[in-house]
Image 1 (cartoon, rainbow, N blue to C red):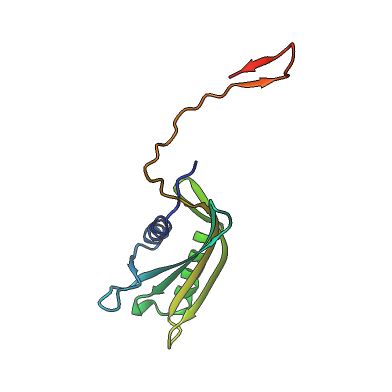
Image 2: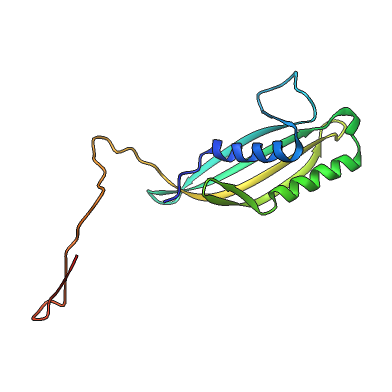
Length: 158
């Protein structure tokens, strides 16, 4: 059974991908001043929608905000960054032993001078709901004996 994917697993994968491709720092969204450019800020929003008592649908939005160096504030640089972001996340991301598909990918320029790039990845996937088992032992092995074809020619299997 696949390991449960946590938000931090997804954020870590996205941060590692950004750091590797752009060779820049990735900050959490709490940093408000004193950051070095070029850099990314990253934020994650999550919604759980229970489907059954054991399965939930997770909807994750990852917002990546890019601040360029002052000397790189031009159309060619913006186009290059947006193309690279689209290429990196166009199909999805591998997290642990699972592959998460990107449902939506939005990218836009924001800020007073339209000099900041903001991209949003939207991912939906199904996940197990972990329930705590208090004072119960987990069964490891089970033996089962079945009787098939009741009658003279009964067959036993185990």
